[in-house]
Image 1: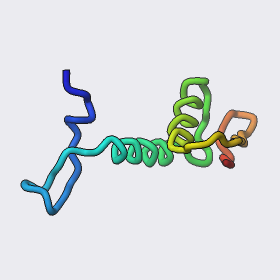
Image 2: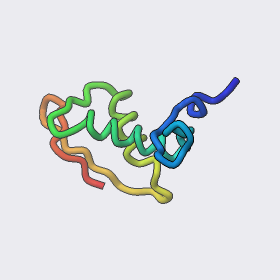
Image 3: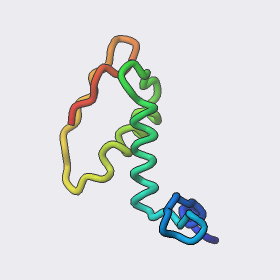
Length: 83
């Protein structure tokens, strides 16, 4: 079975047809950007899964351990995330 990321394409003017296979790193960067856009100030982190997904995409590219603080209001909405 072909990995899913082998089926994803990105635009590339130099490639024949204007598209090429996306690299794993490009896919991860796009996922981080998408989640970052989805979880902004005011977004409610109402479940452990949503919080875990946010932190995994935010921190997974780091090659060392970091301390992160999520400031939330009393309705679990993001105020700011500090790394």
